Length: 195
Image 1 (tube, one colour):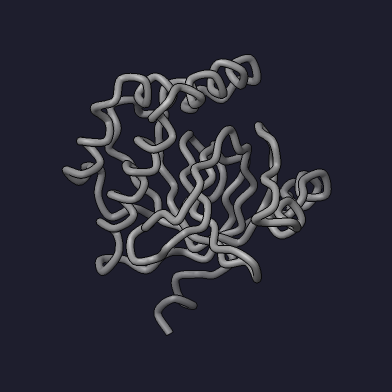
Image 2 (cartoon, one colour; image 1 turned 60 degrees about the horizontal axis):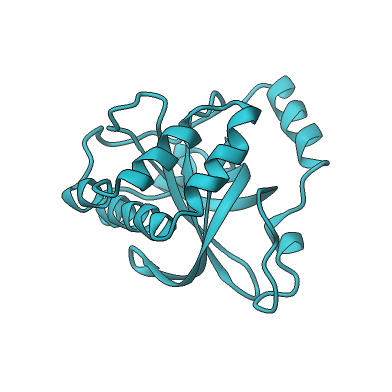
C-alpha cells in the first residue's frame, strides 16, 4: 500500500474504537448500532451477486473474551483480498430467498449516509440478520479448505449483530457483526501466507 493510503487509514482509525475497546464488558452488554470500529480479521472475499456493488467479506476475529464473526457487505475501494470465484454456493443462494434480507443487502450495497437509517430498519425485520448470517456462513464454509484467509485490518460500520453461538464455517462465533467496510488493508502479503 502507498504511504498516503496508510496515512489516511491511520487518521480514520484515530476516530474509531478497536473491537476490543468496543466490547470491554462482553457478554454483559453490546454496543448500540450503528457504530464504527476496526479490528484485525482473518478475511475472505466473495462476489457473484446480481448487484455488482455487493461484495461479501466474511471473517473471524479472536479477542481475549470472545470470538467475533464478520459479515460485511458493500464495495471497498481500498485494498481487497483476492477471490477464487464469482459464483455463490447453493447454501448462499438459499439464504437469499428471504426478500427482506435481499432488501437489506440492497441498502448495504449503497454507500451513502442517507441509507443508514433505512439499512438499520431493514435489518430490524425479524429473521433478516439470521438470513444474512446463514449467507455468510455458507460462503465462508465454501472458502474453507480451498483458500487461506487473508490477514487484514478492517474498518467498518456495524448496522446490526446476531447473537451466537454461530457456526461460521469451522469456527464458532460468540457474535456476528453485520455491516459494510470503511477500509480493508492487508496486514500480511501473499508471500507471508506461502511460508
